[in-house]
Length: 340
Image 1: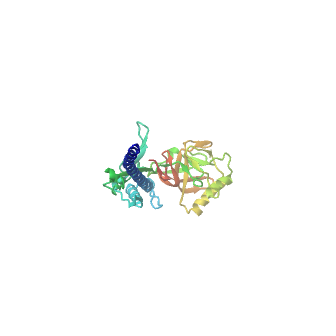
Image 2: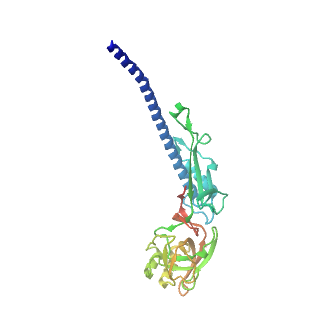
Image 3: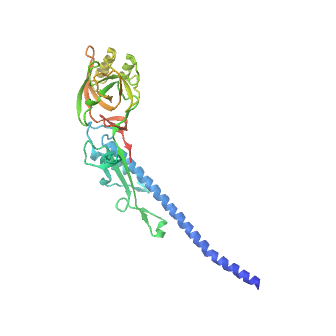
């Protein structure tokens, strides 16, 4: 009798375990399915972010450069920036769907600090020479590109997920000149023109407050070193905002002769050079801190006895290969930077 009672109890326990195991299995399958949906959403979000980054970078560069061509210094091409931003986004997919982007999701504006908090941010603005950034928003939403379908979450009543990504790219002022891009003349800061403007400048090695010759970081560089910098046989070192360069009041006659030769015979009277900008003074014969950079279009080089160089300082020229991050100066950066 006892044996029959014990067997009956064993059968009751087995009958109770089976539904519990089934419940656990279903719960586990749902959890795995939700994890798959979450992973898919994460991948789509990353793809949207990549597309936004690409669009913002292309748009920021399009403000001043397109297809490798530099527009007139000081001109800002907002419509072009929005166009190339959207084109860059539309080369991407998210969740297997080729993206479209409304015009309103490619914005031009100003990246600047908030005066009250000091926190940097993007403010949409009408097109002007103050524009320096592009913000791009990419979406998989009901209104744009459609929401992302879910496979397993629909079992819990959620069939789709809307996802949005955003990026801001800055095309600011140059913070450095790369190796080989500099020239051994510096410009005084008060001779840097506003964006779109130009200023006629003459450098006289002995009696000029416009600027003067420098030897980068060499305290006692020879005339042969300077000639090499002028003709390009000695590449200039990398120089960045905040560096101190060695100014020299006066220069060897052979250096000016070499510059005249380069201007007339090599560059055929059309020579644009990039100069460090330093604090203005009347006596450039000691170290000066680099405040920024400016493009200078050479128009005339006079040899001895004058030894002068004349030309136009150009406001907001774009420096190829220069990185964003410097203070406001005469040289726009040539490479955009993602800032958000």
